[in-house]
Image 1 (cartoon, rainbow, N blue to C red):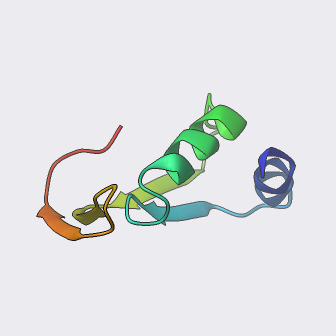
Image 2: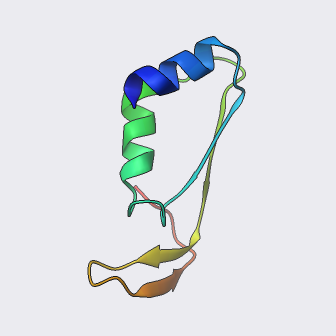
Image 3: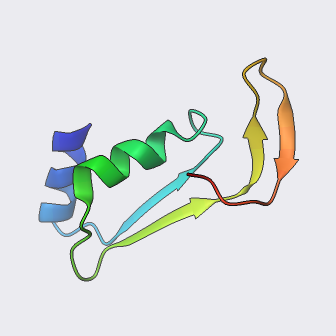
Length: 66
């Protein structure tokens, strides 16, 4: 995933769009590990509103994900 993200940015992809419901926040961690510090012109967007518990239930949550 790190190589894929790095290559996408190197090819000019300007937006990485994710959400905490895609893997319970792991995608945000992978993106940060692969790309931080973010290059100029790159936008990383993460959507909130719904998260999935360890038991698989959807929970309305407008808070910040880390």
